[in-house]
Length: 465
Ligand SMILES: Cc1cc2nc3c(=O)[nH]c(=O)nc-3n(C[C@H](O)[C@H](O)[C@H](O)COP(=O)(O)OP(=O)(O)OC[C@H]3O[C@@H](n4cnc5c(N)ncnc54)[C@H](O)[C@@H]3O)c2cc1C
Image 1: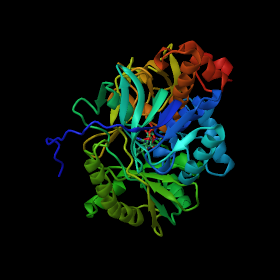
Image 2: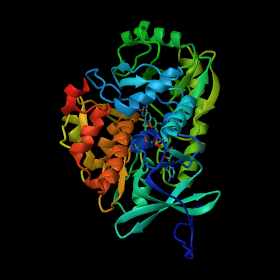
Image 3: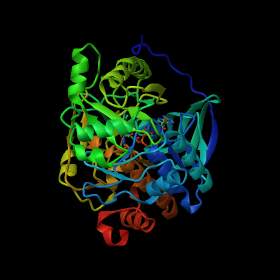
Image 4: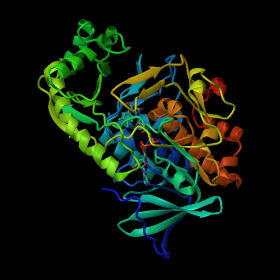
């Protein structure tokens, strides 16, 4: 049981400064990897740290990368994210960007290769990577962030940096620095987590042909049955009547729809169907409940797949993801807060630093449902949404930038997170090169650098082609 009312006073103490660097990237997920790769290009001293023993964050839990293509089929995320995919492809660890009527595009990646390739690319570029290091606090001088406090087997230490990029997904650095943050929707509800798991021995050909040939029995959400006739790497979302039947026959299933993602390896399928409502991804007891409950739910979900879904008759359990996937925690209050209207109106921003197209995709905080809303094209992510209020020397990239709960449900997918990371890394570099705070860099110069180095921005479309 937690005892959050009781407190003790921790005595002040001197701690070691382990490192002083130019740019510090906290968190090595999709946004952190690209941020560090972008920041290091001028030969700056860049350190990336992660609390886990590997890079990739949620890119290692069996998910396809969504959002490289826009709703009109054009590629809207390029630059370093694409270079990362090219490197994965070179070791047969990524698919093409496959158009998908529901998700715009999916790019299947092999989780183990993500860890290895990301590390190789960072090391080749000269980024120092430190694992097993948790950022637990910050070093402030007035409203300026000077560094962070880390906890590790070596104890409590500090790292100082000229510019810090918060890519923790939870806005850990921003929150500790005093940046005002939001959590969840207007009643504090967040999208629920999922513990992904992988089954082997799946006949994915049988699955897709069953859907293609018997669409009435195997009805999917939004994706027409013909799609499955033409694609052998795919996501299935739907089969609601099968779930209903299984539930009526006594299985305990936490969701209303089936979500199956084919793996890159033959016979593998990743299952996105556990759902643990009410978990707070910033609280260890709540996270422990999420891990425990997610693991418990797998039994009936696996039984459902084997007994009701074609192609799973001989499936067997292979592995769970390394950690329960957290969809939503804190979001910073930045200089601009992206809204659902910005997304649905395909809004252009003068300070655009990335373009995204993924729909609003809210897994409801309560119950087992989900709502998707598309805008018909794509929308910009403004630089101001990466710049926190109140604190200097800090920029945020990834799912915790400044958005509403609704807008976050769209920009959170991994391709836009990678594009934001690249922009944040380039902004940090530019700040040091031009001797200004990261929030004060010239947006025109940042945009020019992004486009010159291969990123996609709509106002520069001719240069992009
Ligand atoms: C179940 C689920 C399904 C999803 N489905 C898809 C999908 O199909 N396709 C898609 O594109 N997106 C999907 N998403 C969304 C996407 O995965 C995330 O929004 C995205 O990965 C966020 O990227 P990020 O870089 O902001 O954070 P993360 O991927 O969360 O990475 C954060 C990194 O920071 C590290 N870290 C965190 N705190 C600290 C700290 N204090 N100190 C040190 N290190 C720290 C973590 O270890 C981690 O490596 C899904 C998410 C979930 C949870």
